[in-house]
Image 1: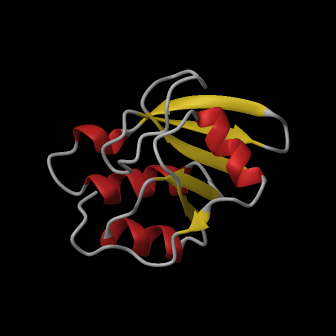
Image 2 (image 1 turned 90 degrees about the vertical axis):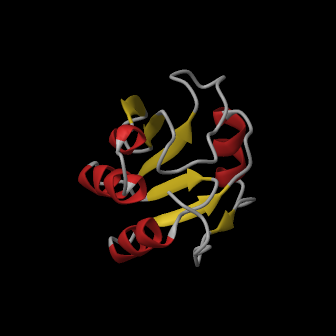
Length: 118
């Protein structure tokens, strides 16, 4: 399984970025081979449609789970359509966010806030 966490930096001590479409990076954890990689978010520099660009990038990475703050309507539709589960988390360390996910302490995002962008 691959878990993507929206991140403010490249190391695990950095905090989770609650902005999905405009976060700087994603930390991708592959639970099968225990590998971790960091990718730059292509949506961050998009003039519009950041959530769409970001969603498509994570779909191409074959992500199974996203941990972030929230999803806008377009991002939510793409993520849900791809069968990716998304979970809401506050701005805490990435390690703590993963620990909360593994303990079943994060709330699944089952709808979007239409007023939220990204």
